Each structure stands twice: as C-alpha cells, then as structure tokens.
Image (tube, rainbow, N blue to C red; front, top):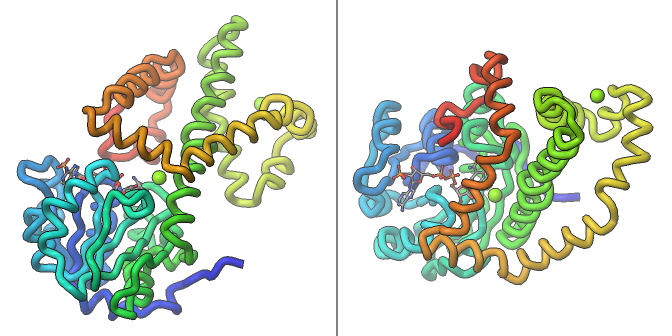
Length: 341
Ligand code: NDP
Ligand code: MG
Ligand code: MG
C-alpha cells in the first residue's frame, strides 16, 4: 500500500517559517499562491516583465516581483511556469540566485526526470503535485476541502526536505484529501501516461470516434453530442463515487450488458499494445524530446494539432448546445478559459 499523508502528518509551521516564491500565476500558480497566503505563509509571486498575469495577482493583494527578485528574497521556490519554459527560466532567472539551504519545488517532475534542469548541490528538490486542475485546487481549498497531491523528494540536502514538502502540501489544502508518497520518476511517467492514454488523449479520441460514427451514419449531431460527450461526465462522476461497479449498478441492465459485450470489442487488446508503446516512448524520453524540440522550434506541430482539433465538428455542435445550458458556463468552467481561444 502506498504511503499516505494527511493533515495530522504534517506541521504547518515548517512552511510558515520560510519565504516562498511562486513562479508563474497561471492555473497552478494562482492556486498555490492564494492557498499558501490564506494558510499564513509568506509568499511572493515571480513573473516576467510585461506578464499578463501581473494584474490578477496584484488584485488579490499579492506582491509581484521579477522572477530573479522573487527568488533572491525567498528560500523556497515553487516553479509553476509551463513545463516547456522552465528550463530556460531556471537557467537564466532562478539558478543564479539560489543559495545553499534553499529549496526548489515542482508540481510535475518533467524537467528533473528528463534532465532539463540540474539543481545545484546543497539545494532541496521536492514536488507537491496536485492531481487536479489548478482552478479546482483553489476552489476546493476555499470550500474547506482539497485536491489530492503527490509528494516526492528528489534531493534531501537539508535533511528536512520531507517535512518541508509535507508542510507545503498541507498549506495548499492537499493533505485534507490526502498525499501519496512517490518519486519524480513515477509521477512524471504515470502523469504523462495517464493524460496521453486515458484522460486527455484516450478520452478525446474515443469521444470523437463515437460522435463521427453516429453522425456519419446520419444521426443528428446534437443527439450524438449528448450521447458521446455530455453524458460521459455523468458516468465518470459515478465511477469516482463508487468505482466502475457503481456506474454499472446505476445504469440499466441493457446498458450494463452492452458494456460487457461491446466494451472489449471497441477497446480491444490491441489498444493495450498501443498503450504499452506510448508508455515506452515516455520511459525512454522519446515523447519528451519530441515535445521540447517542437516547442524550441516555435511549436509548429503543436499549433497545427491544436488548430485541427478546434475544427472538429463536435466543437461547433457542443458550443451551440452548451450555450443553452447556462449552468455549464456559470459553474464548472474555468474563469480564464475563453471558448475558441
Ligand atoms: P500555466 O500555463 O497556467 O502557467 C502560466 C503562467 O506561467 C502565467 O503566469 C505565465 O505568465 C507564466 N509564464 C509563461 N511563460 C513564462 C516565462 N517564459 N517566464 C515566466 N513566466 C512565464 O501553467 P500550469 O499551471 O498549467 O502548469 C504549471 C506547472 O504545474 C507545470 O509543471 C505543470 O505540469 C504542473 N501541473 C499543472 C496542472 C494544471 O492544472 N494545469 C496540474 C498539475 C501539475 P505570462 O502572463 O507572463 O505568460
Ligand atoms: Mg500532466
Ligand atoms: Mg443511453
């Protein structure tokens, strides 16, 4: 059984006794900075010149500094800029100002696991990785709950890195839901595999194929949208509450029987071979290299994929239908997300 941490296993005063710089104020950055502050931690936000996030952070009463100045005046640096910019940001703005006894924190192990960042000796390297989007990390905290976190220590230079990491995890609300002890390697490889095979890649492709199969057979796109996309959330909610078993308990016997008969026809054993191939590319660094090389070239492949995805007919149908369901816009959506942008 994995080693788990809860609020009672961590001492809030450890992180309250340090000065934290949160670098980046995006999805994770805003949630960490605000949760830390509301947990009584001294925090500053580090942003680049002309950052579009500056006003948002200042409107919350947070102190915003340049990345270099934020690092200089802090002893714990949480790096929450996008993964693909961390390497350069670290080399230019962070590394020159790190001192022995400082700690650098991450919410994803990508740059450490693939060697894009090599921290200096004498600096603790740890991870507190919420297993949910940043906007939920904030919303759950405000509501007195939390999003589960993975906690890892790559380098324990001070001998206190675990206490510090657990304390940080507690301060952002993660240990209310539970922390799981892991390593940078396990977090990075499982995170990439999960998002590529199941959560983002797998689910998106499954939905698109379902929608295409129905509409190409002449069914109305609106009906196909509800059947293949909208209802998925309702089914997944049941799975989160009570496992796949609860989903099967709640749906009709017809649906349950169809699940057994047709699930393995659609997702056949060949899909598992494909998943193993995806995992291999993650483990041997092929995926990381392809992502970073494309980003370094100005992201031509990434932009082309994004454009193609946005053109899929399901997006047009979905936009019209969601416009008729006011609670979707009001409730679950990310305030910073502009549809179509
Ligand atoms: P975002 O894309 O939301 O981060 C954007 C922030 O980074 C903005 O404040 C932006 O400021 C700043 N930024 C962008 N480029 C630079 C740069 N070159 N120099 C300085 N600041 C820059 O990132 P996420 O929150 O999605 O991800 C942050 C980390 O958290 C990643 O390691 C990610 O893997 C991890 N993570 C993310 C999750 C999520 O929910 N999104 C979930 C779990 C982990 P500007 O206005 O200047 O562009
Ligand atoms: Mg991820
Ligand atoms: Mg049905």
